[in-house]
Amino acid sequence: MARVQKGTIVQIAGRWFVRFYERRTIGGTILRKRVSHPLGAVTTRGKRPPAEIMDEAKKFMININSGHLPAERILTMVDFAETVYLPWVERYQRPSTLKGYRQVWTQHLKPCCGRTWLKDVRTFNVQGWLNAIARNGTLSRSSLKRIQSVLSGMFSLAKQLGYFDLVNPVQDTRIDPTAAEPAETYAYTLEEVNALLNLLPEPAATAFAAAAFMGLRIGEIEALEWQDFRDGEMYVTRSIWNGHVGSPKTRTSTAPVPVIRQVSERLEMHRLRSQSPHAGPIFANGLGNPMNMNNLLTRAILPVLNRCANCGRSKGRPHRKADHVFMRDPRMPQWHGWHAARRGLGSNLYRLGVPPMVIQRILRHSNVSTTANYYIKTAAEDVRKAMKDLERVVPENRRSDLPDTFGTPKPMPPLQPESIN
Image: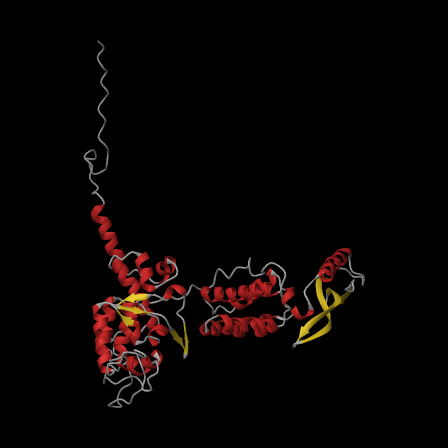
């Protein structure tokens, strides 16, 4: 039978604490440690604790004595995150997800809560961590939500595995409402896409066309193989991230994408330049392995777009004359990223009158709200056109009963009594 502890109430630095012993896992070893739990501030002059402090200590020790977490399940936040949670993410999630979660833990959470015991965390503790992280003002609202989500996932797993036996303490927390909104994402217009395709060399132009007219993600473009291109469709079944080959981002992402004629012709020309292969990567490097799209960006795309307005040389290359500094040619289109082409496809289809539900299927999103909220960008010209269309259907402000310029209505004719037979 477990020993029932009463605890010892002590004063430390102007606060009352209750001390007790608990078996905890420290560095992988189960040790019996003396623990101090804060009860409240010292508000009396005597050395004897007031009644409310004694009652608080008694209630707390009831929870300690009735606790049923085994010693091997009592861990600090850092031990749980690095020995349980992150290994679980590595086993069951995508490598890119693991990288993002590990970055959130290392940069933001570990410095403020790493030494806290997992079982003692309450909602006010989590809210304090989130407030402290947001205090420097450098993180946007979406970044803070991501940190909140990672914390919630940690406590959900802790409950599932028996490391935490209370309600998820992240559940009722809120992020800083004054945090900055995330930066607006970009979507290429059809005019920008055509301008880029006319400038880029091969195979960069064909790869960019796959992003702009098929809506493929960068990892899906890298993983394309010739056997995926058949019957006028591209079957998306793989994705590559930092050399790791896996499945696409979501289950609905594994689907065929119709290939328009212009892209199909580009792909066939690219096949001829590649010695007419019928298998293997569509975009292959010199060793026959999948080409890294970011390397292609650095070596083939940016040098074309970032050229000097004075001498035409790419940024970073020696100028033909040393009598000027580099100034980017403003006539060249700007590069806004591979994903801007995917967002551009959604926006361009919407401008052509395609319903959001159909755009969702083309972009292979799990739900239409993602498509509508993040992948359909309304241009200013679309807004003006919509209001012009409204202007054409609204009737003119003309009424026959308002003849004068002051809008005074005409008097109504007096009622005539009906004749009585």
